[in-house]
Image (cartoon, rainbow, N blue to C red; front, side):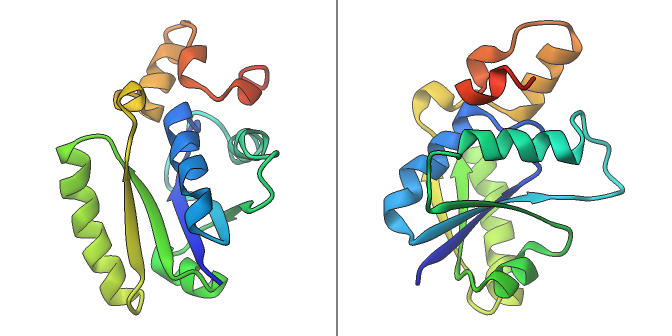
Length: 153
């Protein structure tokens, strides 16, 4: 069984995140959208809210599972029997960062393979950081969000 983990803090999940997962569905038997929980990090949305956003975004996709974790991603993948990490890339800056992390994960994750998908051009400027800044400023960030979570925010 080909299982991939799509890790992130998803604070909040964006259309770009959702698009990467949806495009990867034919490649894997199961994709686990795994929300990292770090008690030291300050999030804009709490754990319960972020989890409900992710669940809503993928409720119509039976091969997509939603979970949380608080350990090294490579160790989480091993616990879940996942041999693949799914990551989205928006630009060369993302690639440089993600390439380093992929090499580390392959080493400590016992040949954990990272699969990169390029963001579609219309999502290349989407980021959770941008969404948070718009929301903090009282703006409308709905253009960046999966439709099913707009009402939840």
